Length: 55
Image (cartoon, rainbow, N blue to C red):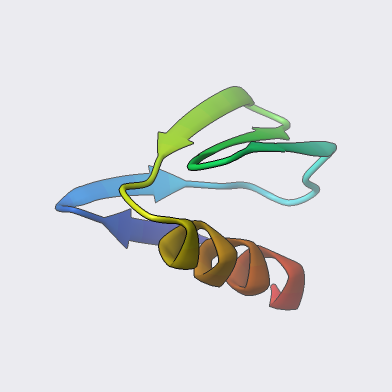
């Protein structure tokens, strides 16, 4: 699955093994490794997490 934020496409493969959250930063670890996604506000990071949990 792919997620686009500020013009950058982040590809996340199932299964997701871990998710770490620190304010505006989210690190998602999947079978391809860890990906850091830096958000500009807290609402965007919450929307992203909701999207990951639904997938």
